[in-house]
Image (cartoon, rainbow, N blue to C red; front, side, top):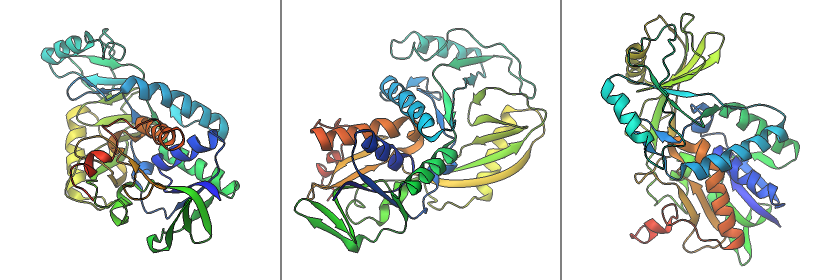
Length: 350
């Protein structure tokens, strides 16, 4: 009998897998490759909500854990996927500058907001009001990480690509059985695919569609991430990742003409040079209305657990939420009430 059967190998699934392996637990991972939000994500990590100049929930705790977690994974997988690069918030007025400085005076935000305006001019962007610099930022090449981690699991014979059959799951007195696999615990980390899961599909996972571009812009000279209504992330060779849109109605992962036009208009608000769309892609983020993850144990089955709802901040949340769930299962350390799925069971979700 293994310790953990993990369903899903996006950011949530691999975060839990690695947390378990680091603690000498045995695992096996199943995934049918149907969810792509982790792979196509912008991958940015940023401790500040730049729209409102407010702190991301438990930002310092997440950044500290994430930094060590990904550094160890880079060493383990022998590749770089964590790129530490400044995020600059372009200001559109003196008022925005003043709001930035007011925010930087707050104790929770002062470690993350530089009080020195960035006055450097970047070719292809007009910035008469300059930029604010966010500290402790960067991006993950999520597709590279997920592919390398899956290769590692396959090499260790710990991975099987298949669609999970919920009818084949049996609950035992000391764990679960799935086909020929017996495990003490099963972790569902399926992203938006949770809607097909009869054990947890009553929980309010909303799902927010996001569309992104890869553009080619030879006249855009940028070695930082610029973030306003969209982010522009330099990839090298005149290529930039740009995103993202937010659509709460469409739950497909197909690019749309509406999303395309919205991104084009937003890009044109920021850059003054020509660009060419190289690639257009879309995915559905697993979001929750109260903007907190869905973490915890099934009300009736102590061996069935959920790790989901990482939303737009999966890069930061993944390691922290995986650790919280692992510590809860192994050491009975209570989950924070804000992430515990009991918050919905207590409201009558069953």
